Image (tube, rainbow, N blue to C red; front, side, top):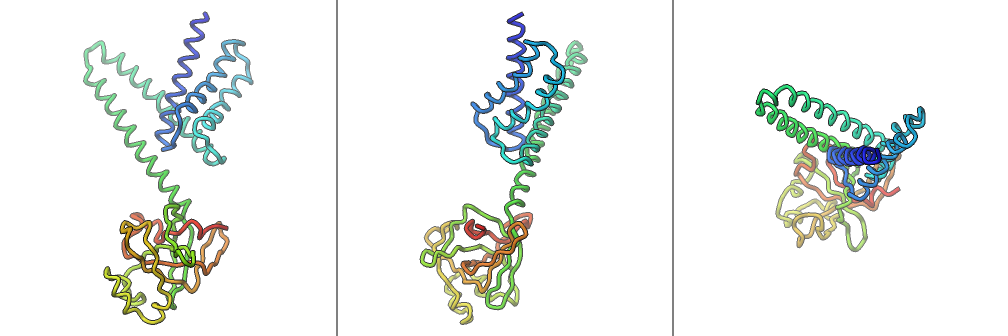
Amino acid sequence: MAGYAEGIIFFNFAADALLLFVTGKLSGRTFRMPRLLAASLAGTIPVCIYLAAGPTGLLHKSLTVIMPVFMIRIAFQTTGIKSLVSMVLTFYFTVFLTGGILFGFQSMYRQYADAGKWSLIFFFIVSVAISFYFIQRRLLGLNASRRVISQTVPVSFTLCGINWSGHGLIDTGNALCDPISKKEVAVCQIQPSEEWPEALFKEDISDLLHLPDAWTEKLVWVPSKSIHAESRLLASFRTDSFTIWINGKKQETNRALVTFTDKMLSDDEAFACILHPNMVRE
């Protein structure tokens, strides 16, 4: 009996570890194997109680429902109710998906194995693997889109009488700043038009010398750190006003420089500006 109980506990432990692993892959969350194994070990608690004391009614059912929350918290160090609920739902989705796959495999094996139709069983396994691959890619794409949207804020600024507005991405990798004034630099996407001086769209920086006086007075050269050309100086401009809306609150600053590009910053047009992280500190 002891060996039978240990086998059940070990099987439950291994199944929880596999389900948590698949949950992490589907959601794109990073995890450490020791924490995942610790969460799987915690998942065996309801099984141990059931084997030791038998059916305990409400206690056993409550533990069975609540335990996945603790398992997700332990395995992925999830913080925030919204994120935790999302991960728990993903875990349950993985459980039902895995159960459906195993049930389908068992049904096909019983139906076709004796008849020698192994090609159909092989086709089923390949189909499941391909489906899992595309489901994972789709979920990773959705998670990436949500992260980008959550890191964008409305932005507007005025420069030499021209108003610009759009959404800016808070990029922790943007290290552009003026080493003298310590003003941060935002990279903004613009399109050729009558408003913007033509020199801004020229690749040769010497063309910037032909800018109107109002523009040259605001011109500041900064070393390019996050741009591919490490040894170049980047032309940026002091804005007349720079406004960011954070959680619906208006935040204005005069400590802002902007540099321009006519290249598309976001393939899905989710943002048209890349902000320095210090620009959004409340």
